[in-house]
Amino acid sequence: MNNQQLWQAILGHLEVSLSKANFNTWLKNTYILDKTEDTITVSVPSTYHKDWISSKYNPEMLKALKGIAPEIKIIHYQIGSSVHKQEQNYTQNQTEQIPTENTYQPNKAGASTPQQINIPQTSNQNQSNLNPRYVFDSFIIGKNNELAHAAALAVAKNPGTQYNPLFIYGGVGLGKTHLMHAVANRLLADNPRAKVMYLTSEKFTNDYINAISSKRMEDFKQYYRTVDMLLVDDIQFIAGKESTQEEFFHTFNELRDKGRQIIITADRLPKEIPAIEQRLVSRFEWGMVADIGAPDLETRVAILHTKLSKKGVSLAEDIVYYIAENIQNNVRELEGALNKLLVFGEMENKEVTIEQAKNILQSMLNNKKKGITVRKIVSLVAEFYNVTGDDLIKQSRRQEFVKPRQIAMFIARQELASSFPSIGEFFGGRDHTTVMHAVEKIQKMLNEKESFKQEIDLIMDKLYTT
Ligand code: ADP
Ligand code: MG
Image (cartoon, rainbow, N blue to C red; front, side, top):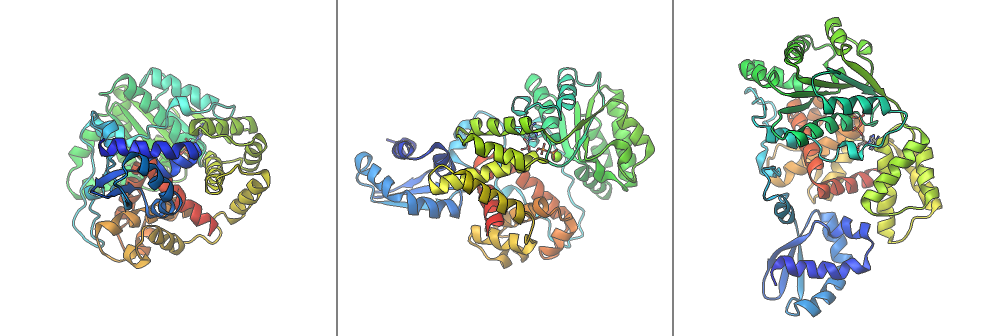
């Protein structure tokens, strides 16, 4: 029996006695790293997993081992590397890159050397830029988004023809990014060689500035003006940046003239974006402008049901309605509330009652953002990864500090919407581009690895409950 078979056999024993959700949260991304005469070393995703598994499941595992490999008396747990063996097995025939901590070297804070511009060279990299879970199939259609959805579908079927550009606008967490990725994912499914570029307007600005300072303007133009589909998320952040707007104007014109599809999202209508050139506004209105509003109750319930069935877990209907009635304006928060209840149920190892659900959600709604500071984020993340808060702020580039530091930056950006420079300032005066890079990198890992997402969810839970 090889290590993988041995581990499958042990997990098989545990699977019968655990709920599926519980099993997935704690054991799905584990594997045997090493086996000696009487010991196996098991890789687990985080310290949190390590503590939990060793205190809760160790006896059960040893019991299972008696029947399968009686010589093994000790199980060691080790926090895993980000390249996961099992996932390597799943993806070994693909060219997809799984990021490792080693691939990214943050810029030295305060260094004045020009930054490299980060222009992807192949379409494979474009693919990894997209969230594979953001597809049409997982997008629930309601009255609030049916126009945007229909337009997106039309664009996916006939890119570069009818609705160019497609401009989708609406509030935070309502599915703009999801829909935009769905179009690109569909295009790539139909035509894997298509060159798709997804980026935020902040990244466009940053790449443009770097291209100028490193005298690579030709590369920049060559890259952006030759894609088959350009997706620019949250264009409102281009406000006030005149030369970036100028460059974007030319990129836009050239792509559109060539019949390449452009999709843009914003939090408001083109003409309501302040400090943006009139000629851009009018171009944004050339194609199709579609809004996404807040979902109605039925749509919110449908979204919750879909998420539950995808996770393979059930939740009492009155609780589903309770969540849907209380979280109305943001699908991301709707998902967050659901996850929170599910994690609670897993920890307790029993069904959540409606009273518990009310308590948990009420405290979540009350606590939201209250008392959350960058300092608190840093200390929680540090605790989670067994390092100190200082380690995250100091200049050390040791690998064991780099990932938690990037995670803390990411959470600060996401939860507090702090600006990149102010986050950089907090983290020992680092450059804002370092923060941007960290946020992008973590987002990419979140998109690619479910186990990493669970890890971050655990940290978020702690953030809102302690
Ligand atoms: P936005 O870009 O508008 O801020 P996102 O596209 O990031 O919002 O969506 C936030 C979360 O909500 C994502 O996880 C997304 O999958 C989910 N979501 C939003 N709308 C829907 C929908 N109609 N159906 C399913 N999931 C949705
Ligand atoms: Mg978005």
